[in-house]
Every structure is written in structure tokens, then in C-alpha cells.
Image (tube, rainbow over all chains, first blue to last red; front, side, top):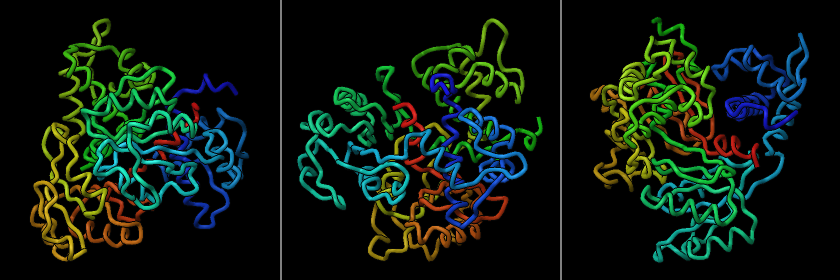
Length: 205
Length: 205
């Protein structure tokens, strides 16, 4: 397996497969087929078999996939068989929502720190977190070795704040601002954007 | 063109293409190629050509795509050449963030109403909106003919609230709760989930 050779579009489908498999496991289902998985995620069985086979032989002809085994393998491939500390930058509505989000549990992530530049917010609590001053962010992230951040500052501040994160050594940024970020090639950015998700549904209306 | 024959996975890529094209247009770029577009979105040029050709011949061999034309076509295909009213259900942190989100402008959507079941919130303002009582939601959504909703209630309330939305005639639900919803086949659900987006990046770390 050579990580560099696997197209990003395939990597992007792995979390979708994992979520569907996890939901089946939660219901006590033990095995599945590429057909069944395909129906759940809206991707063809052939595509799923092809995607998964990029990483090894995880299923058997006729019996399909053992769900717990495939979950373990996918978590290993995506490197979420460990817990990544995540910094939230921007303690507005979205930062608050993320600091309290219950959906990270058992999925490879843990919010570790929350920053803002507003002195009225610094020192306040969001759930278990004390909002920290962004002026100390680069040093704190460096010291803690945090590699993952969620950027929830207003759009005009997003590029500058992303540059601070890059300086701090962050390599993966989930960007909530509706603008694109310029970052070095070794830093990944994912844009999370409700309009894109809505646009995917209106086609069918 | 037969809408039923186009795989959902292709439909899911159209908003990604549109966003990249829109950003090129914003910078004054007038034409692009499947290669250039592919580099921007991390999808192969061949895949992009294949996806777009499902809907007609929008590019020319050698000269590529005229961006404004392709944007118009994609907006037409996705039915966002109009404005869809959207209901937000759940006026917590996430509901507040969405009510104030600046990223819907020119993208086919407009927040039209915000509901909550908490009497302490009902009547309060979020930006331009007065939070309405969820007890009147089904009737209000029906009367307004709203077909699109963003569901930002806590996980335990999500299924029950989704059923109210279905009763009200909503056909597209963007689900922020970290659980899966059971809805009739003619209702689309998209799950928006930061963990899935983060998982897509850790592979590369």
C-alpha cells in the first residue's frame, strides 16, 4: 500500500463508509455486503468494493464484510485509531456549538482548547473549556503538539488566523468561514458549508 | 436527460464544482479546463468531464469551459437558479450560527423562519428573525410552502422533530444532530458532521 497513490476522492468516501458501518454495529449487525452498504450511503456496490480493495482484502466473496473488522481497518487507515486533540479558534456561536458537540466521541477527536481574540470572552467558560487569548495561541498549540484545528472566526479574519495556525504547526484545518484559505501544500483544509449540503438536495425537489 | 438515471454520487459533486467555479469567477477568471478545475477540487479531470457530460455538452475540446455559462447550467441543474426558503429548527448555538451565516447569499437559499420549543427563547430575536414556538411549526411551514429545513435540535429530540417536518411537507433536511433519521423515501436527508470532515484529513497526517 502506497498512501500517495490513493486518490483523495476515495479517501473522502472512507469516513462515509465508516459512519454507516458504525451505525450498523450500534444496532448489533455483524456482517454486511457491498450492496447493503452501498444502499445506505448511495454509492454503487462496485465502487465500494473497488475503494476498499485499495487497502487490502477485507471481505470474502459470498460472505461479505465482518463489520467490526472493517471498522477497525478503516480507523487504522484514517489514523483515527488514536485520539487527536483539536483546537477551536473563534468562540462565537459556531465555536460554542462545536465545543459542546457530542458527535466527536469515539470518532478520533477531542476538543482540547478554545481561543478567541475578544477580551470580553477570554477567561469565560464553554462547557469544560476556558476560552484562551488568541495572542498566546501559536505557542500553546506548538507546546501541546496540536495538529488539527476548527476555524470558526468571521470571514474577514479567517486567512490571518489560518496563517497563525500554520505557524503553530497545525496540519489540518476545518474551515467554517465561507471563504477559501491559502495555506502551504502540506496543510490540508476542509471546508464545511451548509449551502453545499443543501445544494445537493435541491436537485431532487 | 433523465434525472432518475444520474447517480447520487455525481449529484453530490456538482456543488463542489460550483463552489470552485464561483471562486474562479469572483477572481475574474473567465474560462477553465477540467484539469484546472480538477486540481482545485481534488478530483480527476476525466471524472469531471464525465460528470458534467451527463447533463449535456457544456465545454469545447481545446478551449474548455466558459465559467459563467457552466455556473448558470449547474445552478439550473441543481435548481438553485431560484431562492429556497429554509426553516431552522432549534435555536441553540448551532441555530444561532446558521441564522447569522453569511454563506447562503447567492447560493440558492434564504433563512425564512427559526423555531424552538423553549418558551424562554420564543419571541427573542436572532438577527432579523423572531424565534417562533415549535407548536405552530407544522402549520406555518405548510402555509409558507417551505420545503427545506436545517435541524439543529439536540440528538434525543431529532427524530421526533424530523417527523414534524415531514408532516409539514418538508422534503430536504440538513441534519446537524449526530444520529441518523428515519424518514419516508421521498424526503432527502443530508448529515452535516464535523467528525466526518476531520476524518478525511487525518489520513494525510
